[in-house]
Amino acid sequence: MTDDMRPTPKLSNPEEVRQRLESWLAETVYPGSAVRICDFEIPENNGMSNITVMLSCEVDGGERRDMVGRLQAQGDALVFPDYDLPLQYAVMDMLGGVPGIAAPALVALESTGQVLGMPFYIMAKTPGLIPPDIPPYHMDGWLCESTPAERRQVWNAGVDMMAALHNLPVDRPPLKAFIDEHTFPKSLAEQLAYWRHYLSWALGDRRSPACETLLTWLEGHQPAEQTRRLCWGDSRMANVIFSEDKTRVAALLDWEMLCMGDPVQDLAWWIFMDEMFSHGLGVPPLEGIPGREQSVQRWCEKTGLSADELHYYLVFAGMRISVMLARMSLATGDGSMVEGGFAIDYSLKVLGEADEQ
Image 1: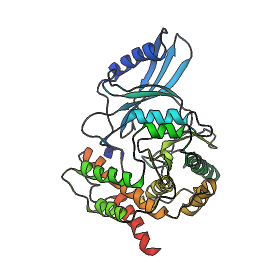
Image 2: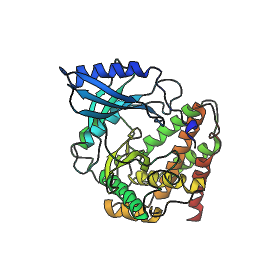
Image 3: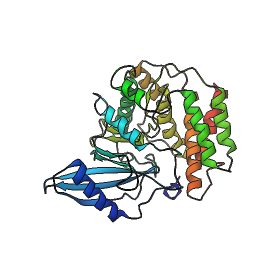
Image 4: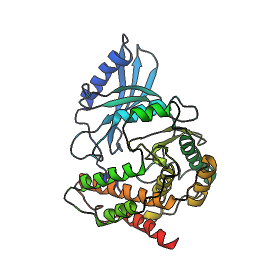
């Protein structure tokens, strides 16, 4: 996957957005203060489902405050049919109060769309390192320049933080109130229904026999859920900010696929995305990054849960990323990943592992 295959949302009026954000911060976040946005940048490698802006502001001429804005994308070339930016803000806000969970420090949410024509939120910039996904971290970036011991430390820190999330009790505060208040998929059956709808929406009048095969297999082989926990959904290395000394997780990002279900699905997505961007591309994995068996063992030890249904959720991960990449390729006018490509090929390979077990 190359950068030009991503339906990266664009801002047609960045200076107007900067001015409106400056006024909104002065009126809403720092009332009575003089606010000046002194730096405003839209990263070249922006997100696929929202627009990221980097800004620094001064309040009453004081110390610069580095922030990140996430703006909900608008238009026809969207990755998701329904995008709930306020829900993402709410889950990070809730987790920010939970000891042991690394959530970014939030500044404010504007959910009406009246300020910029789209909902957005602002969070403090979290210092640290994010593994790249284009090109994948197995091919380029700071992990390539790290030692095998550092890579192992980074990977394990991510698995441990994911396990800490999965250990949170969903029947007690603050998770219970959050789960009761918000609407999102809360079982495997609800997730599969969502992805059946997504497949139809994403492809329109096109067909993807491979994606249909994967989803139909999943619908026909649903396992019992050993437990239902809050799941991150998009649990992958590129959605983690690691501390600059590479010893811990500083923040978990991107909660657009938030759900409840068997938490082994997060582990499966974590493993599948790593394998797809290495084995799936014919690229040797970086030395030091633990493999599937080691990662499963560590997660099971940290959570006390079973990974018996890992294969099912690896196929589930493959279906999801295959359908999403098919949608992205259509949104960019390319369409090359609807019926084939590295994601579909690797997903079908993983599906075939069932016959080998």
